[in-house]
Each structure stands twice: as structure tokens, then as C-alpha cells.
Image (cartoon, rainbow, N blue to C red):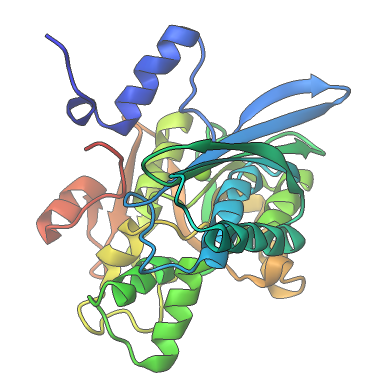
Length: 337
Ligand SMILES: [Mg+2]
């Protein structure tokens, strides 16, 4: 019997397709594919798509912000491996009556983001389609070794950059679900529309060999922590109290579950040896790399199974799926399911 994608879910679908191309490869493994040792460097490549009606609606995002977001979200996968951005190819699929002004706006946003995060748009393709969709492929190089998701060691600290949940809050504001007042609404919406890729931070963590594993938070903190746990075959124990969520958490029904399952934060989640805690802290205290704070939110533990545990305010330790289920929440974003 023929199965449809919704029965498989996004991750199982990718796994199956990857098996066809190369039974030994693990395409789900990292944020980028790494071509090792090309003229002495590692080349990092990643692609990302934004489809109207799936990733964005024109009512909630202006054209230039759309371009910015496409650039930042694609480059964020390079940041997650510690790569320096080189360039981006953009494939545009739009109906024939699509507004030229809109397209130009998107490209202005791409250009603006490239000036901030590095690299540039070097080419691509424009083709006709019923549904507007924009696909970007980013190329970068690692000056040192690429940081993979699989390197977390027992006893490592778990760190995250920035604030988790602002983007989800911003989307909620745009959809009329939350209202935090003019200033906080503006902050959250801006973060949702124009996220920042932590390119310099990723490079510092890689080049100084501080991070043992790393991922960017695109699907939601909990789900992305699960990817590190799975690839490293370790248990990640996260302290819910320590997760840096927006100051307006607890207002208007916006809670911790929204913050850590919402996604599109594009902050970096990484593990680092506890012995290097002071060195990591220095990145946030004296150097403020990328102008962003780093917060220690947990520990890597021995694994009977690769999983994420959370410690709640009362000190109780729960398997994250159980915790979310008790609260009626979701674990993160997965296409097709
Ligand atoms: Mg990613």
C-alpha cells in the first residue's frame, strides 16, 4: 500500500530518502553537509526553503523581512557548524503575475542581511510555480573543524545563546494570539521577522575548540536538544528555570512551553566541557561575541537512551515528552505530521 508523507513525518521521510542516495550516510545528522578537506578546509553546504502558506503569509511579513529571514535562517545552519559564510544561491518559484516590487523587496532584504552576516547572493534561478516559494543554498568554509551534533560528552555543560521564545511570541502577536503591549510586541515581532544568525559566535566556539556539539534552534529548543541527544547518544538534562525566556513570559497565556517549542529562534545550542566553563563565560561577559548573552541551561549525562530530561521548578526530573504531555504542549515543529 502506498504511504503518504503525513504518515511518516518529516524526519522519517528524510531518513528514507537519504537511504536511497547512500545507505551509509546520515543526512539528518547535521545542520550542513561537510565536504572534508578541500584544499585544506572543510566546505559546509546547507539549504532552506520558505513557502507561502507554509513558512510565511504575506499578511504577516513584509517583502524585505522575508528576504532577510531567508538569508539569516539559511546562514544560521552554517553558524551552527562554525563555518564562515561564502555565498548563497537563491531559487525563486513564483506565479507569472507575481509583483516585481515584491521580488525586489525580497532581494533588498537578502542584501541587507548579507551585509550583517557575511557572504553574498551569488546566483540562483527563477521559475514559474503556482505557489510562491524561495529556496536558498548556502556555502561556507570552516577555518577549524566543523562542530557536529554528535560530539556531546558526559559531564559537558549545555549552553544556549540569546533569548528563547521571542520569535514564537512575535508570531503569536502577528496572529492576534498575544498582546504584550506596544514595546514588547514590537520587540517580539522584529525578532520573528528579522532573526539574527549567530555567525561570529559559532566561529569562535569552533575555532577555539570550545563546543563539543552544536545546533541552531530552528525547530524549538526541546526538539533541537533532542537532535543533539540522538546524534551524540547521550542524555541532555535541562533545567527549565535556567532557560532564558522573554521577560513577558507568564503574560497573556504565553508560557514556557510556547517559548521552548516555538522555534525560529536561530540561537545556538551547544555543549562544552565543564572545564572550559570560564572560557565560554568569557565570550558572553567580556567579549559579547555577536552582542549576545550565553546561558548555561543543563548538563550532558550518561545515556541508557538518548533523550532529553527536564528539571522543573520543584527540582523534579521528568522525561521531556512526559512533561509536555502533562501540560498538553508540543515538542517542536515537524513538517507533514
Ligand atoms: Mg539547523
